[in-house]
Image 1 (cartoon, rainbow, N blue to C red):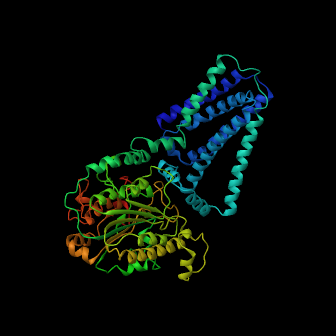
Image 2 (cartoon, helix red, strand yellow):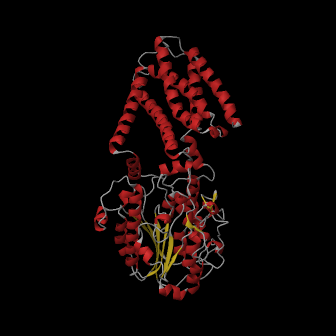
Length: 561
């Protein structure tokens, strides 16, 4: 058992004894007071029970510091009893106070239930990266996720049950405030003790879920703190950016397509699959203008975390903090390109999320609703004959998979109408639809003209767990990567195509995209690393030194690497 946990378990016993002594010291014994204590005790127990269920399934969890989870119920018990007495003396403000305290209790209970649900669904405790995914989730994505797990009737039942719990909590709290246990609240004890309880309540509240996970996100080197520093420092870092060679004079467009949740294991262009899930991409496997990379990996199984490193000079190998990096949009502008960001993904609800910060560096931004094929219209409006750097961010195979495929496309393919819960089948269909969209993007971009096109996914997907850092599976980071270079581009820069062909069987992680794009843009800079660039003869990422999960896992440990 963790030494701190042991000490806090002992302290929890002290707190429990102290809270009981405090309550009996403050209040005379009466039937009404006993009723309040039972309610307060039941609420504290109701909060602790889901966490206790999780901890009981993980004996090794006691090797971590979880002692505060056993201290907080005592603080919650004493705080509730004291609140009920204080509220009973506030006749006019009683109902608003009871409503606010009920909301606080409800959120505490809801958090404990969410923690328990996540554990029994995924088999691992909910960590800060999972919480980041939840915070960055839009209402539409939340609905898609919940409706994939629960039927509409069950989801309605859950919402009805939560509503009933809130109303029942309110009834308990409000009914317990009708009569005061103490005729008057006089003396120093009523001036000091509520403040002491408030201090302990706030102090321990910040050390349990979800507050502790939020603080971890914003701690030094935490993801959200890193994104915030990235936003603050990008303008300053951009002023220090210097190109090592003159910018390319080749007119035409470079198009980067960012896929979503595409796993190459299920793509016929990269693997032997029962179905031809990516017919257009597969048809170009032997095309001398295309380069396919069957050993590409994501740097992290989370969209925001993966794309932020993919599109900045920070990566797993240079260990450079985001606050010292530059982004690909700034680099492209420095190289003389007009930059565009067009996305069918909604802007993150986390304003400082790395993807949003990078997108905002573009000269032009456009945020669309689904389906992905709607991205073709703004693409067609981009002026031809100029140097354009265009990032297209697709919804791809984002969960739920059946929502990614328009009904018109299903009918066009003459696919049988199958249950939406057939996840694997709808996932493969979503890959087929993305293949169709990529074909149309390629054809549309030719008129710009198209000098290069890169397709890479943010991360992969596991059919049971989708994509999480905990629990982690390697299919969550096995991603597709292919690059197209036009004949005119290859004629202008033959060494680029030679190196891309030479490295087709190399290991690649998508946090190296910035360096590889630097090579394709012909814009090496003082933020560029030749050893991380697929277009460089010095590229040296191998099976033995390649990493994922931001350096916590080795690609060599993947049985399919």
